Length: 183
Image (cartoon, rainbow, N blue to C red; front, side, top):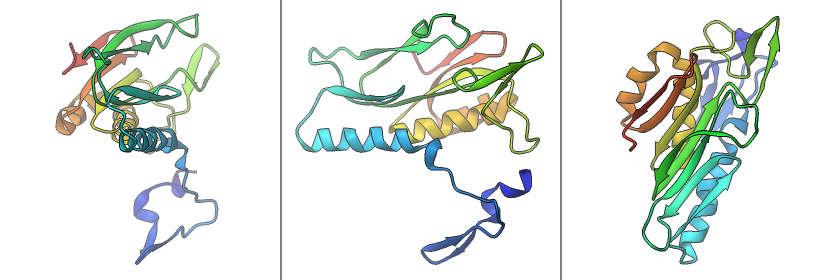
């Protein structure tokens, strides 16, 4: 299936694109919720909202701080928790987007090995370097894209994230948390 992936394969003619091989598809599921969170926040702001957040299944756009001026405290799910709502950390956010990619929502275990839904396009195998990657960016769709790309970058994620100039909370395969640009 690796022959069916990759933007370089997509043919463009003005405003039209063509997928040249049978079986190729574009999946908007990777950024649909993030885009919807950003759009919903824009509608709220245009209606006069100055405080609040839009949370679509963990893809979050923060409009502004709480009415008293404090940032929102957003819990980050523990990727190895036995309880569905258990958090491992929190991120204080007063404005912008937050999205998390990880190996824990959609996966299966076979012969004691975890196989997640994020596939390395170079090998076709699931990524294994990170349990979770939470990104703070100006908008949620950017946070979501960067978090997924960072997961796919595996050991090279830190260098990639430095270049993106975003704040993040990363949990590696051993469960060690790394924060950058976050209190």
